[in-house]
Each structure stands twice: as structure tokens, then as C-alpha cells.
Image (cartoon, protein in one colour):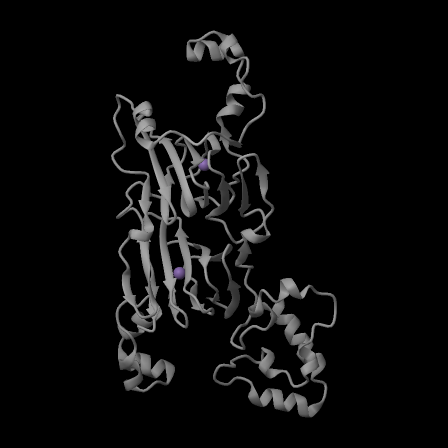
Length: 417
Ligand code: MN
Ligand code: MN
């Protein structure tokens, strides 16, 4: 639709014969492949670029790639940009949550995202859900608890850069710690999931007959007379006792889980680090409980880029933590669309679609890519061409043998290499 409307504007604006021929003469060239031509570079009357009608420049200027797409962009794929910054916060005493799910971000079928804040002592109440929960800590300190299906309890304290993973159905809780609680981003392995519709322990207890509660827990029904009749979801509690104390109180004869439910992503090996940056991976090969979610944390230096690649095994859900970036996604058609990303934004790339992410700012660009898969997989465009028959590559792209020989070899996540 975007492309069609731009073409319509060009056709209408370029009514003069000279303007049309000037435009056509520049069309279908290097960096300007479309016919009719697309992009601001092809506009002969500068007024054609204006937005004289109603608009909010405060919002529009946040997305220069939408206001003036590269001349190589074409077509109109489903919106792959969303942002927690524009999601309403559900605020309760003790913290808040906001989410970007398939309900408002249609492309996001495999992952639903939640951004949550808990003050020191703030509790996300005991609950569970049908989908698995993966999370990355983005601020502060948090305590997590979970009970596995063998009745083995787990409790741990996490900090910025740490992950947790709760398999589908396992009951858990979260609590902000001193000095200033926590903020974190959750990824559910089902885009239709909602953080506002989980199975809450308070809801179940309130909706069970008192005599059944008495039988179930082996105490008089009257003991339950003060239970909340409405769920808590998030509520303000006291900062909990030290971890060792709580761990001892939670201990079970069943023992402890075979694998931890937490992982320090910031401490993971830096894959193929170059001058351009590096990627850190957490999947079931090094974070064994994380059987349905794999993640890669990309750090892209100023001026560098996460190179052209795709993922053969799953959609990519991105959360931007730091810096400024710009991603173009390519699909058959051809279609190529570009969007800008800032902290708190969410990107989404369907399985197998080509993409690259440029650092457009002055600081490191950091984003985490989350996949509904047990393992992280990617295919590098440059590595593929470097390991195809050189004559075929040269003939396909009209390249010299020297140019093809100079392509980087190996996965090369970041350039400059
Ligand atoms: Mn949960
Ligand atoms: Mn990717």
C-alpha cells in the first residue's frame, strides 16, 4: 500500500514531460532499482516530499526510515516495528507491566513480549501459564522462584543481563530486591499470550469452596477467611530475607532441579568478536532448561552493522536495549522495508527472511534476538557467496573474480570484520 501510494503521488506530481523523463532516466540504476522509481531521490519537485496535511512531527520524526525510505525499499510487508514505549502501563502498588502481543502486533505469531517493573519488595504473585516464559533482566535485581514437575524448588537472584526460563506450566513468582527493584522483559513462546491473563494462585483459591480448601490443605476452612477475593497480580511486599535463608525454607526432600533456570547472558562467550562487535548466544546447548527459546544478544559498534543474514529455523523477535539502529527486511516479491529502532522498541522478522541491522547512533547498539526454538541458527549471505562456485557468483552478479575472492569467509556476524 505504501509503495502504491508513493507511485501514485509521483505519477500525479510528475505531470510535466521533462520531469517524467528526468525521473525515468535515473530509474533502474545501481541503488535505485525500481520501475517506476521509488524514493525521495527520484522526486523532481521538492514540494512532492512535503507533508502539508495533519501530522505530529514529534512522533513522525522518530521514524526517519518511514518518512523517507531508502530508494532500494519496495513493496509493503506487514508492520515489523512495535514499541513498549507506546504500550499502556498497567500500574498497581508494587510495579507495572505493559505488553506487545499478537493482538496489536499481528506479525508476532511466535513470541509475545512483556516489559515489567517491580519496586524493591514488589511481588509478581505466584502464578503459572500454558506457555513457556523467557526473560532478560534490563535493570536492577530480582528474585525468582519456580517448582519443577518433579517437585524440586528453585530460587535465585538475578541482575541486569541475566536470563530466566520457566517451562510451560511450571509455577513461579518474581520479587524486586533492594536497592531499587527490577525491570525486565519477558518473551512468551506464543504470540497470542497475555501477561494480563495468567493462572493466578489467588484467583484459584478465591474460586474454590472453603470446605474444599479445608480438605485440600488439611486446615480448618476458617483459616482462609481473610484470603483476597480479587487477584493480586502485582502488589507491594517487604524486601525478602537473604537468598540462603529463603533457599533453606523452600528446600524439598525431592532435591534441587538438574539444571538452573537462570543464565548470565552478559557473561556468555563473545562469538566471532570483530571491530564491528559480537553476538552472545543462550540456547539449549549452554542453557539446558531453555528448550523452546533461543536467544542472541548483539552488540554493534558505532558505524558497524549486523551483517546480512537470515534464520532458517524460526521467526526472530527483537528487543532493543541500547543505542539507535535501522533494520531492513527482505522478502520475495521483491519486498524490502526499513524501520528505525530505539531502546524499548520491538522488531520482528519472519523465519527465513533476509535482514541486516545498522548502528545509526554514536553509542553501541545492543539488541536481543529471541527465537521459538531449542537452538540458535543463522545463515550468512556473505559466507554463502564465499562458499559457492566463484564463477557462478561472478556470473550471477557481474562481479570480478577479485571482488568475489575478497568477500569475508566464516559467519562474520559483524562488519567491519
Ligand atoms: Mn509468568
Ligand atoms: Mn537476525
